[in-house]
Length: 369
Ligand code: ATP
Ligand code: MN
Ligand code: MN
Image (cartoon, rainbow, N blue to C red; front, side, top):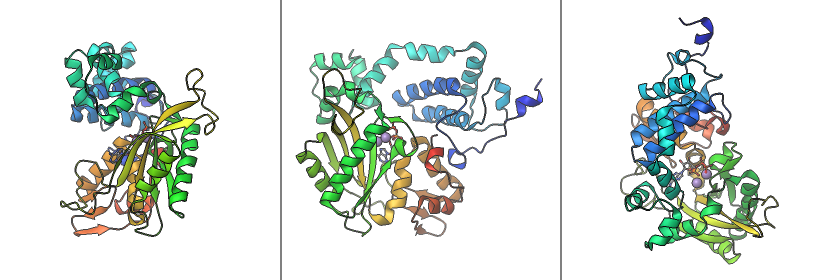
């Protein structure tokens, strides 16, 4: 039944870190359907199921051509029965019932709206949903006690749910660069996260800060934050200090995928003067709120931090999974540990880390899994 054209797609390697995943791809409708199911699983705290749908979606993103019949996917990895069923239905009927039902469900809509509040995770949102709270306005009426992050999240809800554009990211980059060079000359900042992967928009802007003289970066975040605050750039910030050196369980095993760098999760106040492209601020307002993450790394760990904070989240997960299962190594945003040799492996660039892992180098634009 299969014509030659149907087998034209070569079978791809199964780990996302073994292949290029570009930003623009050929199977958007299928990927969007799988993303809804992934998102729903994540919001229901079913991580395993979420990852399965994400992996299936990422496989489709790596394909060099549009899929028209499910048979064309024969021999491809990462596609479980459930994902294949969804793909088949979308290809044959244009939509998948389960996806449409999910999108329309009260729970999914409410969980999306509530976790769209900065500082609100799936657990909290689920508790509120069960109490009949479905929207940020319901939440405000409920009189619940909110923490500082959540109060800021509600206050700047509309701005923070607008995509941040590259021009705004660049404007914030200039501000952070100024702050960093004022408090520690010679320190350098790098744009990381989605914008480093070539995305045109993002939900926030991420920066990595370091200084070529090891040790000079200590205490840097507090100074940067003070400077930014004094200049009126910060609407909210929460700084977490570096807990790497004090940790007892050893640097190769950070808890989950959290690392221990000094970091700051913040909300910037970006004015029209700083960004000439502020068309998205509503009405007469001359400023907008933008989520910004800043991380400080010692120079010796810079390559690992850069790789670990460039993403995507699935790409990072796949790198770590590859390291453990295929190389008996533990990769974190700080180091790479070789369990066989019982030693830490040093690297000065992302290219070196890929090489140590026995992987072909994938540039940031190919890490959009
Ligand atoms: P978006 O464009 O939506 O912001 P993004 O890829 O930049 O997408 P982020 O949530 O900003 O997503 O995360 C950027 C990178 O930082 C990801 O690779 C993620 O693994 C890493 N990261 C985010 N939060 C943490 C954290 N708490 N600890 C360690 N790494 C993190
Ligand atoms: Mn980001
Ligand atoms: Mn971020």
